[in-house]
Each structure stands twice: as C-alpha cells, then as structure tokens.
Length: 362
Ligand SMILES: *Cc1c(COP(=O)(O)O)cnc(C)c1O
Image 1 (spheres, protein in one colour):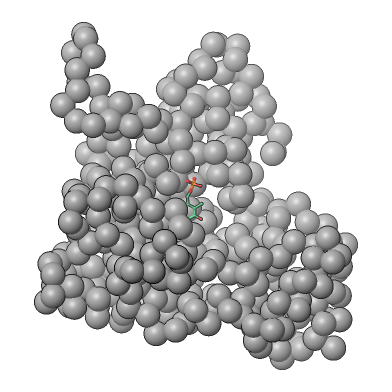
Image 2 (tube, rainbow, N blue to C red):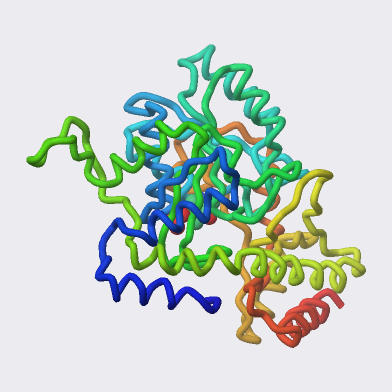
C-alpha cells in the first residue's frame, strides 16, 4: 500500500458508504479514465474474471459460439467463455511478444468460417505486462469484423506506441487482484470507448434491475459491482501506479544486467514502440532440466519462482478444444521461469536471487 489508501477507506466508513456503489467507486472510475484516456468509459467491478464474463455477454457471445482466445495465458482469460455456453478455440503466441500470433489468428478465422461459422470474439492478452501486437491483431480483427476483448489484467501501466494498454479493445479488462501491479485485494474493471457497453456492464453487474419502483428484470443479472470500501484502496493505489511500474522495471533491469552475460539466459526484450510494466520478470533457460534445477535451487533457499503460464491448449480441462499452435507457447512453458518480481524487493533480495541462479549455471 501507499500512503493514501487508508484515507479513502476511512472516508467510506465515516460517511457510512459500505456498499457496491458510492463516491469512491465513481472516484476510482474517474482516476482510471484520467489515466487511460478521456475517450474511455470505465465500470469498476468485483474481478477481472467478472469483467471478461460481462464483456463477452455484451458482445453477444452465447451458446454454440466460438471465441478465439490466446492460449498462453492464465485460465481466467478463457473460463468465462464457457460460462456462456460458448467454446474457446486457442491461438498460439509469437516469439516477439509471447502473445497472440496474428498469423495463427488469421489461420484460425479462415478455418472456422470454412468449417463452422465466424468466431464471435477474440480475446488477446498483454501477458506479463508486454503488450500484444495491437496493430497486427486489430488489422486481422478488422478485416473479418470480429470484436476484440483486450485482457489487460497484467498490463496496467504498459503502453503500445505511447498509448495506454486498456484503450485498444472493443472492450478492455483490468484486474486489481492481490497479485497484480496495483490491487484492491480483489477487483476489476471493464473499459470501452463505447459508453453504451459500459452502461450495460454497470446495469448487468448490479442484478439488471429495470427502471421501476418494484424489482423487475428483463435480463439475467450478476452481482459484479465493486464495493465502495475496496474502491477507496484503488484510489490510493492509482497514486502509486507509476512508482510500482518503475520498481518492477528496475527489477527487470537488474536481472537483465546480471544474468544475460552468461549467454544462457534469455529475456523478452521490448520491440520498438512497446513499453512493458514488467509485472513479472521472466527468463528463458536453455532447457526444461536447467529450468527445474534453477527453480528447485531457489526453493531450497526459500525463494519462490514459478514456471510460465501453462498454455490453455495443454490444460486437462481444455484438452478436447481446437487449437492453432506451432509449439511456441509449449516451449516457453517448458523453458521459462518467472523470477521474484515484487515492487518491494530490496537490492539484497535481487543479489541473492541472481547469485543462486549463477551458482546453478556455473
Ligand atoms: C488475473 C488475471 C485475470 C483475472 O482477474 P481477476 O481479477 O483475478 O479475476 C484475467 N486474465 C489474466 C491474464 C490475469 O492475469
């Protein structure tokens, strides 16, 4: 936490605004809008997962539809597709960003139109804070007129061609879960340039009550709105966002400087025009065996590291789903490791991690 979260939370208590609405909720939405861009509308919600669920519904995804989803991601990107009775079809990554490959995306679209029907939406993810190839993905999406949900859960503070992540999709999603770059303990947001989409999200997230004195519903609603208490934490966190991005980029810089000289550890560098918040610093080791040796050596020193996200097309739950893959994310999963990346790591912590890794490589 920074210095002012408690001030906003205390104000919620003092004014008795303990509800899924109130001045902190609209204040937090304004803060996000001011940060991402003034043409963006924002609905603060109870989770990023809920935001994806609502976003898919608003785009009309339903039973029998297919949604093209980045395979290399956390399961929360894909799960909401199934909540709606639709089917995820998984798209592999490209090496330059580790995110959705525009080439495989187009292959998948052509294939599905030919063999089934046009996919209803695309979910592209800025994984680990690295923006996806926004230009490439938007070009294909535009060519076939398929809307994009931009999963920016890990990428608040990242930019593509100087524009903030969270401003690119037909609908974008943020997360404020406890592990993200800033947090409200749990929370999320749905963003869109179309105010109608955001109005729908707010309506659906508060049980879809019609405008009537009694309780009347013409749509199925959800309980997905953000609490005014947690939004107070969010208001304080927005004040320290850049500070957190700077801290995470410093972590990355330290690891890069001290591990790349070995020639055995690779890093995901920023392509020109890409700026990553470096939510997590990830490395690629020469092999699965060396990655495991490093991970277990760190563990013995009580240092947590973790393999990269296991691709969705390799998950037991999605083993029967179609996928368009070329082995890229499978290789990243096998050889990749997320290093300790918290905003509060000390120089000593970083020195310890690096010296333990160097011992293994030696
Ligand atoms: C965290 C995360 C989500 C889900 O956000 P929650 O707020 O935890 O529900 C979705 N997509 C990605 C890529 C994430 O990392």
